[in-house]
Length: 101
Image (cartoon, rainbow, N blue to C red; front, side):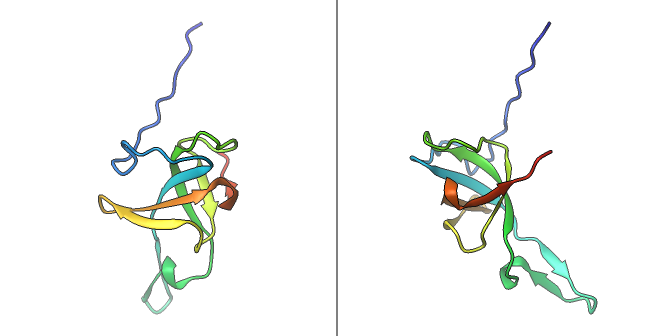
């Protein structure tokens, strides 16, 4: 019986970056919502958690792995932009949950 190995693709932002300890490196996009009047409202104007994809994890992270879709609080972690991608570094405990497939 042959076994398949899943390779997780790293984004260009995650290449060569390894978080330390219990830190998680996440990429995300700020989606825009359109109102009935046709006005676009960015996520930055809303008070709700955001969704992202785990790109790299530190050696002490126990419950997350690369490729997980996670929910995190809008104001948690350190936000940065790498290669035009919105990125976030936060502690594992700041992740609110993982989306199951």
